[in-house]
Amino acid sequence: MLDYEVEITPLGGILKRVPELPEVETVRRGLERNLVGRKIVAVRVLVPKMVKGRVSDPDEFARSVTDNTIIGVRRRGKYLIFDLDSGYYLLFHLKMRGHMRVVPRETLDGKYLALGLAVDGNPDEMRFYDLWTWGEVRLVDAHELQTHPSLEAMGVEPLSDSFTGETLRKSLSRRSKTAVKAALLDQTVVAGVGNIYADESLFRSGIRPQRPAGSLDPGETQRLRDEVRSVLADAIGDGGTVSDNFIDTEGQPGRYKPLVYDRGGKPCTRCGTTLERTRIGGRGTVYCPTCQN
Image (cartoon, rainbow, N blue to C red; front, side, top):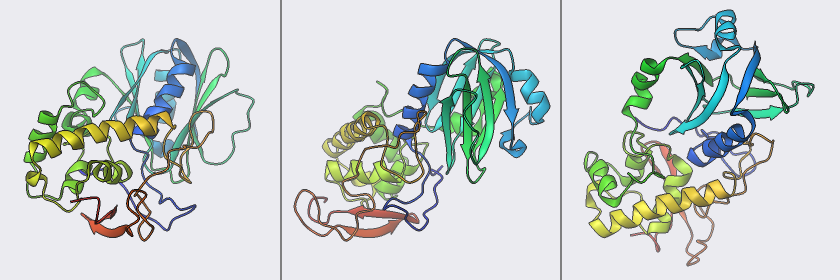
């Protein structure tokens, strides 16, 4: 299961792409700060097709969600999960162009508003915007959440204690003949890693993205595991990657600047060699031919 992504003409130097783990985690933290413990008092569905699943009628969805208290906001891979006190869950995916804001309700809606959840207190509305309306929200019960196909098949969370060098080795062994870059993008191998952070992790670990996943020795696998965690932590600390299509819940852009991603033809920041750009599994890939072996 590959990370869903589309490469489009660059704007501002960064390609449009699905928000990856650091961006979704940044949003999760903002939502948690502002929403946990607060009751949903009204629901606005402005783009009905984005309400998916068993409860897809906008009016029924609004009735079912209203009067629930949000008791937790979690992330699984690139999904956001609102735990509701009724025992149900709201499952969100931002897809390509979705973003969430938490604002005072008197704030003008602006363009591309798809869903609004008004809550008690201040700021008092969570707004889900989506330029392309590819994002989605589902109201699900515990069984539906547990058996959601993408969540059920998803690999280990890379920031969890379960993500070890041995765990990564076993996951990569299932894709032993696949290029390691493509294997990292497979969400059944590692959850939440996309094109940016796969390129960055491979660069930091000194591993060429074209190498078969099964060719990595134990030391290389451990190093790759460590660098995946390190680059994700750095990007989360910077509120996500600089991008034309990502802002956090307070409207602030990310600050993380990639070392190799989207820098093909520019000098390597380590050795000065011109970074090479290729395609692996249909995805743009940048690496240093000197630093990565």
